[in-house]
Length: 282
Image (cartoon, rainbow, N blue to C red; front, top):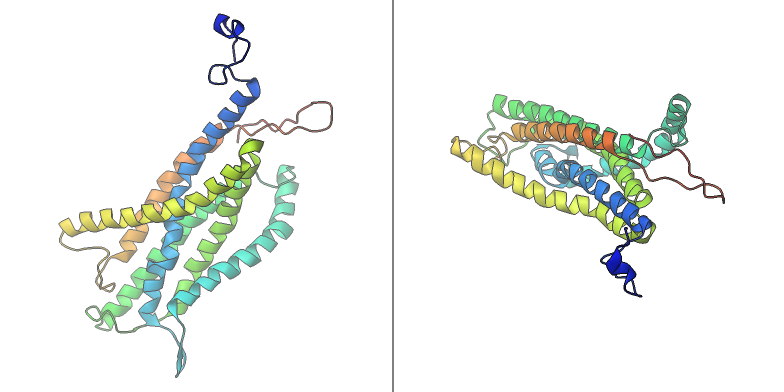
């Protein structure tokens, strides 16, 4: 930003040497969003289990509604979608007015508080999934089905509904919060990049989930028993869920530290160039 002798000696300014104060502020906005992006990757790792191990769990459970019809295990993801639809309405109609009355903020809670709530819910989703999986494995063991992975465990698939619902609730807070954060806090000229950045969290998280599975498989196999073997009745899928919950909890602690240091972009109001007091620490 400082004009030196070399800048004054040339008529045309070199944009790689001299920047406006606005460009510097925009770069600072971008740099403080990058750690938040990284801290949300564990949420995406948890979400990746919806279409993988959650479905594999369901395929071994009792899914019969009538003698001639069984519920496809992958169709239970509809509970996540329904939860999102219902929760968004409740969030806007009930939670925001209540939070507004408590905090005095027009939005009820801040964007980072919304994302943080979703991260906590993703931890709880893994804890619920681990508890249900332990119950399913016990049912398989009690009925002598440990070595029969294709047999139906006498436990209703409806036991999986809570973990699908918890994942839907975490989506309502985290995904919507990320979308708002990377649009509102990005420089105006880079808002399309911000939209791509928040979507990329899900994609990168899926790759990380695959890598984490490989690591868990390698480490557990050295102990003589794979946690994520093909026979899900003999595997220790519940331990994997607890690992995800623990990693998510550690990640959440880091997120809180980042959020407390985050400085929101100042919002211009009126036509006289005055700024509101939204430049605040979370």
